Length: 222
Image (tube, rainbow, N blue to C red; front, side, top):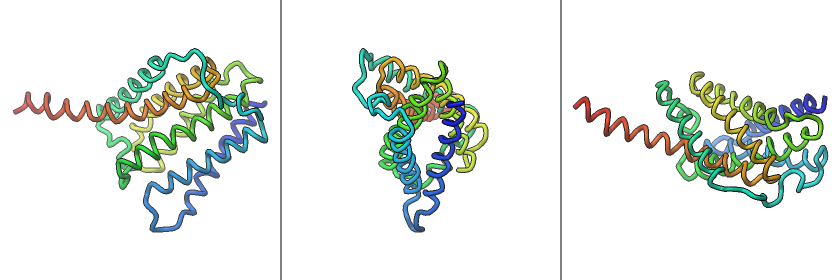
């Protein structure tokens, strides 16, 4: 029952954050909507932690991790992000290009890599997973499923269905990693780190695939 209530509240937070972004004045940079959405999600998540539970900031993961091997956190995130991008390119999809059109590289780094990673992890692992942990043994998988499902909104941003399907699988696996790291370390820092690594790995995978196409494939056809 508690998990069902948490899912309902999570969707309210997600939808309300998106609605606030639509109130942004015209003429703002395209990436400002993402800033408003993630900023609202962060504030709603912090309020949920404080007033709905787990009430204690440390119980929500706001503490330094214990016994964390950062290499085992970062490398899987990089590999998973790169694999997701490679799979999208192999599907002959534009990937996230329609959504990121008009984003300067600095905005991608600050808003997508860092801003989204921090706000989404506080939402999914800091509040949601912590909130339901006392009522179910499947808090981490449920937070991963919620996290992946939220990325279906990319369909409304113009991202092709086959790319969204690949990203759903990628973010589900990312969520499982982040949930496990949250349980093992008791901290939000490893989940945030693996999330950032996933985003960075996505860019690196794109660069590698483009170089491979230009150097190897075109070299064979010329």
